[in-house]
Image 1 (cartoon, rainbow, N blue to C red):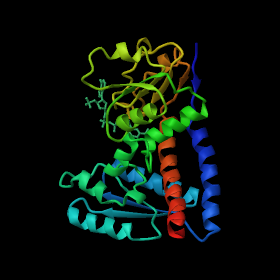
Image 2 (spheres, rainbow, N blue to C red; image 1 turned 45 degrees about the horizontal axis):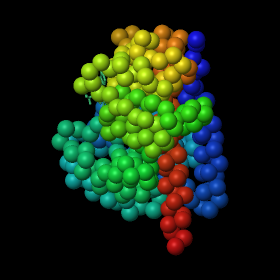
Image 3 (cartoon, helix red, strand yellow; image 1 turned 30 degrees about the vertical axis):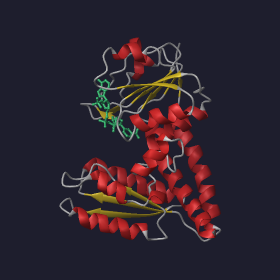
Length: 287
Ligand code: NDP
């Protein structure tokens, strides 16, 4: 068996074309969706992510503003800036690039963002809303995974979904979204004994650990859908996922590659959340 590949670039392009149409509809009402990105410090990976987000905004008809604060900026200065952005009607989405320098309390920073502008979906109120099945914004990476499953008509209801990883940005929200869609969900972590025992029974396996190629073919059920969220840099400088793609693709039914899988979807869903925030702002102002 050789798996069909879930091509994140193709799905992302299709969604972005739809987003451009929505942005044009907003433009016809004199609204341009706006995203503000706050970057503190000069972490090279964060700088690249922020640049890519600004580029994606431009392509999607979204106005973007990047605020790059020096690493030693006091937390209160950034909190104050978030308040200004919360009150700015031209800004519909606010994102603080993580990780923040050690003297910052990420939880306080994220909680300062207006819930209606929390396009990353990390605000505690949005997390709570996700738990109760009423999310205002889905976190971008798991949202992108759900769109990939939808695009390939992967049955979720009644299936056993195994999520490896329990981070707040990927593993936990991913598990909740699969649960919301009727899957029986198992969450595995670094503390799980006999990981393979769980992964071998997964109809849908989502891996987000940051451990290169840790999922091997013997850990995967024949015909399973395997989603690799991991992005790891190898010694030679190339990228690889958390799944051993070369061997697992021979056993899985559907699989995402790295690069070109979940990565392009994450940024696309950020654009989608920003446009959605702008659309909601119009409705909110209409009453
Ligand atoms: P974190 O480091 O925050 O979390 C990793 C999780 O994996 C933890 O819950 C950890 O368990 C678990 N884990 C680690 N080792 C094992 C193991 N051997 N067996 C089982 N579980 C294990 O990472 P993130 O969730 O932020 O990111 C995960 C990966 O996804 C990274 O490679 C990251 O670069 C990538 N990523 C990709 C994105 C994309 O757009 N494609 C977006 C975001 C992240 P424990 O909690 O017990 O320590």
